[in-house]
Length: 515
Image 1 (cartoon, rainbow, N blue to C red):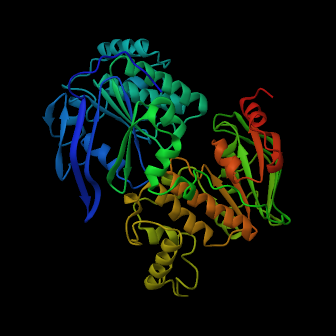
Image 2 (image 1 turned 90 degrees about the horizontal axis):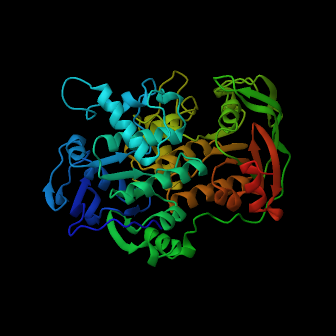
Image 3 (image 1 turned 135 degrees about the vertical axis):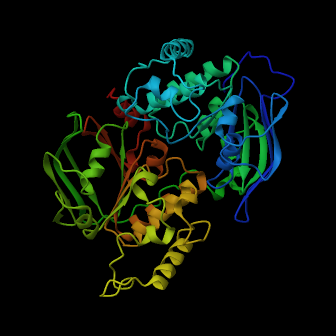
């Protein structure tokens, strides 16, 4: 837990009282009251759809509450837009960054609808102010570097700098480590420690129990739009928080579903031989990469992001062409196949970026589920006319099977929570009864219940006889579901262990490059 010597004021820095908010008759926030003091980190915990994002979007001025009040330093305030919230010292760091890649870090801080006041931009003063903030909080970033050239961790720090530059006293951080490597996460927590010691306050939205227990002072637990509990972090445990979050005994909803007894492996389904690939900048990403995966097994791929995982997935699904090597699926060479050919070969894809590449966010659930099946005879006549009734019936059935909520097949997917978005992708991909499932970061950013559901479905595919590849930064996830784990580093497999001989320390050494 972080500690701070900052003296607490008589009134909270921020207080939200009896907040209510509904969308189309569905109560997203139901009489929620929270407060945050200076010099502390509060966690906001809850399953996807529990109301966390809605509550924080109200605090940041993106939504207006139906009822209830907001106080800043004891003064009642109302926000018509984020600009009003920013003026009152509220900053929000979204999970998906809002930076412009083609501009420098400095220009990103100064631009945008709430980036400055007046008609003229004073770059000299801005540069001085930004450098002062960077020195104060030990940010190692070149303000003139193009944002597109920065690492994910550096981009996140630019977002934090932007909020501080605009005078933030409270930072709302939405799943801040979801896209970070372990080293970047440690650097972030060091930064947060400095901020709270300087009197700032932080609201941390996270599903990672170890982070919440390790870095926060208090925890608010939301469940189904209501405040389920407020606890001091030092007086609770991961098990208690998980039980409060899901509303049932911890035994009924483990963070990760333990892998069942291994099923009889079948023939090799995926055979990768001598794969070589480079990034857009010419850096080598895959170096004579070789891998086999059999039907009836879950093969976990561990490693720090940026060691060839993205390139491997792109090649597997026909989105990139290797310099050399081959990919064979079910006896068929698909190395240079198009995405449509890959689908027909029996591969299913659960992409890392469910919003950017997994779904078309402006389309409905049933339209997204239809993708790749729109020419099937049960949905399309020989003359190209779609059978809308059949499409809706199929989507409704899959939503029930995969527990997608709310049960609105014609609802636009943009309005669904992250866990339900992932279930929509899973429903579409697994409905085809694939021989190979490739799931990249399948539970990143998801709550306990959604993660457990995803793991159960992947395990079911294995039991059905499919080969399942799970690419994940989360070792706990890989240890829970995998029959075999390989570690990728520098574009090569540098280590492998079977379930009967899993050794966390050894795998950790491989990942860190020590062994």
